[in-house]
Structure formats: C-alpha cells, structure tokens
Length: 89
Image (cartoon, rainbow, N blue to C red):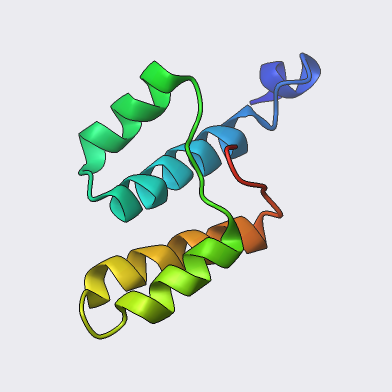
C-alpha cells in the first residue's frame, strides 16, 4: 500500500470496485450474469448506462409486470445518483 500511495495509485482499488459493481448493476438491468457483465464491460471498454430518467420510468412501468427488472433499474439508478455518473459511462 505504501508503494502505491507513493506512486499516486491509491485510488485504483476504489475505482476497480466501482467499475465492477457498475458492470454488475448494468448487466443485471440487461439480464446478464456476473461473468457476462464483466466481460461485456471489458470488451466494450466501457458501460452502456441508460439515462436516469429512463431508468425511473422503466422501473415504474415494470413494477407489476417484471419486478425483478424494475428492481435492477432502481439499483442502477441509485448507483448512478450516488456516484454522480452520467449515461454511457
């Protein structure tokens, strides 16, 4: 850890965790599993993140017909707001 701080790389661990969690949340929204979600982020060199207004709209629309997908939309929305991220991160 001291070596990484000295080299200015301390934040890398936090960013890695953030990217993995975002990949999993975006993947859940798309109906993907753990490996597919991480693999898609790596191969695309980023994440296809919808607009927060769209996620909220879809969550409300799907609440009764597909509560699992509605929950995935709300989870992804929460992470985007908490981390102040924009679509197509």
